[in-house]
Image 1 (cartoon, one colour):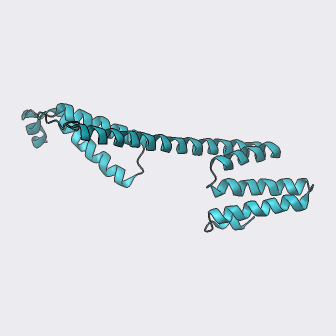
Image 2 (tube, helix red, strand yellow):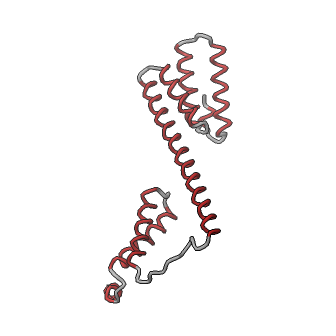
Image 3 (cartoon, rainbow, N blue to C red):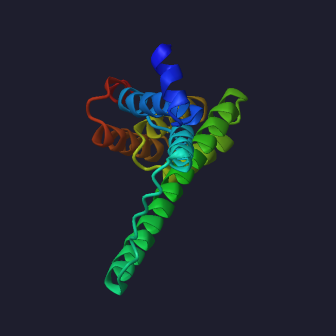
Length: 178
């Protein structure tokens, strides 16, 4: 406590004393826990506040020459494109999970056609999720038991879907149950 008071008295500012442990906490917790946007935003803001409170007004001139400006502009554009691609992938995965959830709800409401359509949409959006394919196989099997029309053709489609789920994730034991 005495050293804390000494630091404040030395005109380092109370903000620096409060922000530095918070920054270290965020960095250490990002190593332990999964990083999310809130953590990154808090880290960004706290580093900005630390820089504002800094007595040394040291600046780094990244755009001192035209070559640096050109290269850094392309790097920033590349990072923006990669970020937009990542956002697109996350949005499609989220949309697929919404379709999957609505498909399960439709199946619980005994509406197998709507369930098959919704889960098929989820599979089209997220082709690498074996859970969606496995659930579609289960729904198609339930529909096949209640409506045995075109048994041979429907059963072949079910086997093909189940093989696709096994191919996606051969270590998942639930893919072998159906």
